[in-house]
Image (cartoon, rainbow, N blue to C red; front, side, top):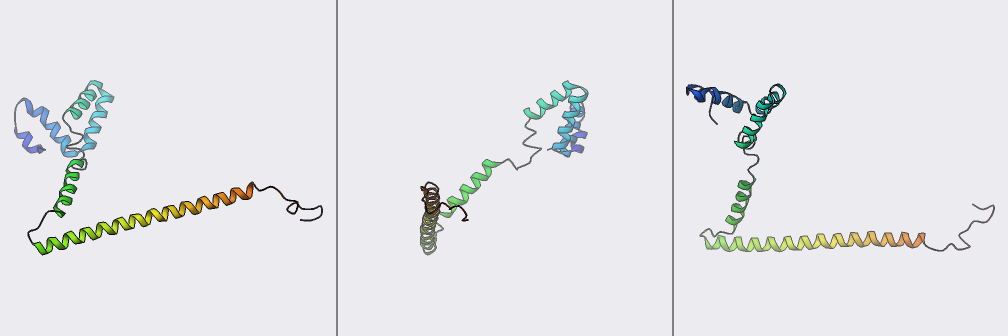
Length: 153
């Protein structure tokens, strides 16, 4: 992003065009959106031109949102960190300890996931048994001992 003063020093034809761009860039996304909306309100071709300029020059992603939309770089960073954990360090004792610790952690994770699965199955079985008991009670035929006689409550 060029600064306003550096752009102002360049003379000629580009000066009148690059100064407003630098000014809007220095104020961020709100200034670009405001200029575009005002362009549509007062002179619609100017608003349309700003919309095309913003989208064609990638102003939405580069200058307006910063690095927040740089997902590919974050994914690469996570993969690089993951890959680095399996890279040998050069110290055989430490590498053996790391391999053993990672193996133990993977076993603990598998055991914990198995525990969670059994817990879910037990909860589902309990809910299903409760449902079947309630259903059996509601479908049970009415017996004469269940019917209240006149005068009884």
